[in-house]
Length: 202
Image (tube, rainbow, N blue to C red; front, side, top):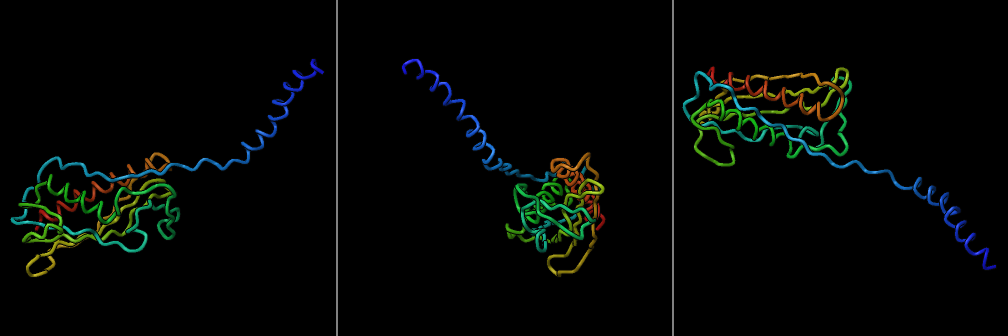
């Protein structure tokens, strides 16, 4: 009996291996970690030629439905069907994020005496209102689409000075989220340059 004890002790770990493998196989899959993204305006290379004489205020952009929510959006059929990306979010709601980045860009382009968010409640001469129409990762082809409608108004009379819809479609190297966000960032900066040009023309 004394000689058999070590053999039994050696057999027990061997018998436990299949049970351990079964338990590991039944374990829940690893949940992907949440990712947070932001769009960042690149400063203007040169100031606009004819800045506005007065303060420009910019409220947060308007957006409808899922466009106002923080999960990144994906479309594979040209925008007719949208899906929210799991575990991928903007750091702020798109209407707020885009407004804040537009302020940063327009300040760097010196489009007016001052460019401020509407929350400051200053005595502004002009207001720039924006509506976000599209902000999504695309497939077939891979890339990103951003569409913004912008209007420049006289704050005192509420008269429309200029308005335009800006659309940018940028390709991405592949279908991952990082490349899609980079494409959207490129498109956003292209639109911001066009918005600054529109303002300076009036």
